[in-house]
Image (cartoon, rainbow, N blue to C red):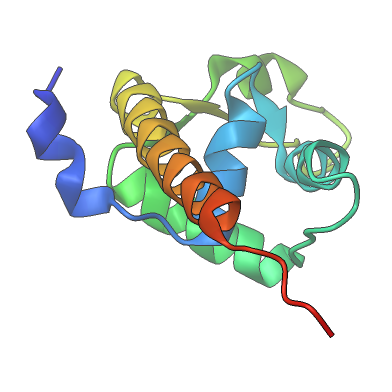
Length: 123
């Protein structure tokens, strides 16, 4: 696994990629499952469409952060139906996600400090 400073090429992450990795942190999911998990985790405040999802999944897979899960292989159908593809975080993806969360914690810490320093304005 790469050292922490090697994660920098993926950081900071865009919101869609971050939410996809976060959705996959629990268990392998298919595309619709990822969309639902993003909506659940963000309490409906962040949503992406299928085009954004699959464009990002393709990039994340090419970068080695996400991989297709073997869970989807057992879901093959014989009636010509298209089987759902399941995705999961790779080891690299877990490391990058952890590093991004650490980075975001620093941003939030800085923001809270600055907001505490602001004095209320009088009318």
